[in-house]
Length: 112
Length: 112
DNA sequence: TTAAATACCTAAATTTCTTAGGTATAATAT
DNA sequence: ATATTATACCTAAGAAATTTAGGTATTTAA
Image (cartoon, rainbow over all chains, first blue to last red; front, side, top):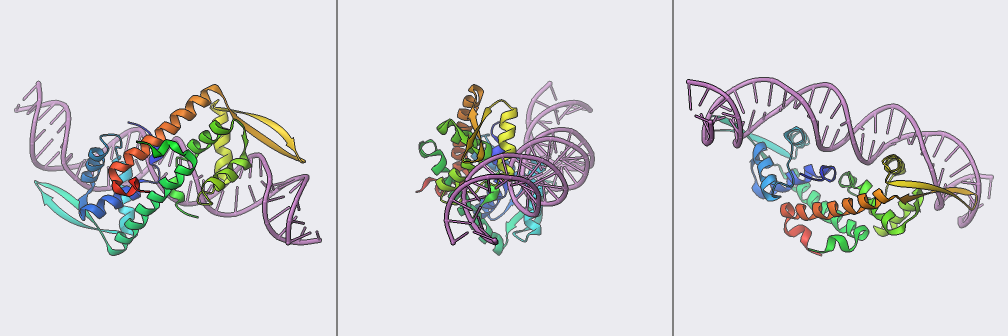
């Protein structure tokens, strides 16, 4: 693994971004998607993910649908309208954050 | 201001990076430097900065020198040898983190 | 002479995450 | 057959990092 410290504050943004692209995902699926996309470099822990999903729900950014699949229950999360807006904002905020950090780290982040 | 949430976990890296470039900085100077470099977008709070500096000192990454300047005391922070190494590592880690996040945010972070 | 800038600091509370559990079914390996 | 891994949900105690809200003190600008 690696830099878990840096992940702080990014989880909500990651979840919103994925939901924006997929319309409908369940918790376990999100953990696997992140693992796949980042080639195992980022591994969300369920202890962090589920409370985050519940918080997004209580804030009205997502709502849920339960579906049975192969004897197991999946709880799908979907963006609400305000969740769509929030997702866009968080994504832009992150892009801006990276851009801003380039002023401090200059060359280092530009390459590759 | 903006995205304070994203800053989480980045403070130590920023401080080490600045000390690596300047050899010698005092706390207040660091807050101003970050403010300048990021055009007011990132404003370190002293409540976060000073405890971080003290922690870096207790870990042996920095040491201090007090100097009087115009009737006020400045406490300069300098990197130790292990601090130099730690700085390099943290900087690389951050670059790698941004790179990894691009897998999730694809196009969004590539531009500009 | 009052406010703002410079310069240091701490401590309570909050937020966020890790660690370490717990439950349960399906699929795979032994 | 049966034990382990993968799938699928969850909570709660504790740790770590930061915010908020103070405090002290000197110099400079209004």
